[in-house]
Length: 65
Ligand code: SF4
Image (cartoon, rainbow, N blue to C red):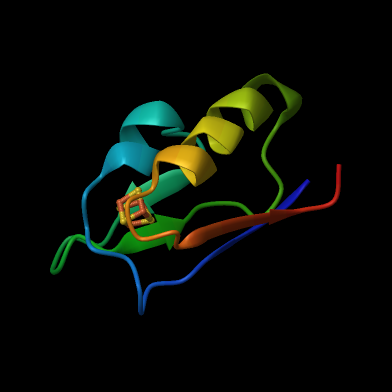
């Protein structure tokens, strides 16, 4: 699994950080998503899939398995 997060479309809602804090963080200034890793550990893959589904801006994209 590989992740991309589009900071241009991110609306700083923070759902991704709540769901998968090992993969996502938020910019201290404007709250936009900060990708901590492009390849989450196996233990967080399901949470990352949930983040993709619940992101209100569709800013998170997953590729690969
Ligand atoms: S869930 Fe989506 S809109 Fe919200 S902070 Fe994460 S990437 Fe941005």
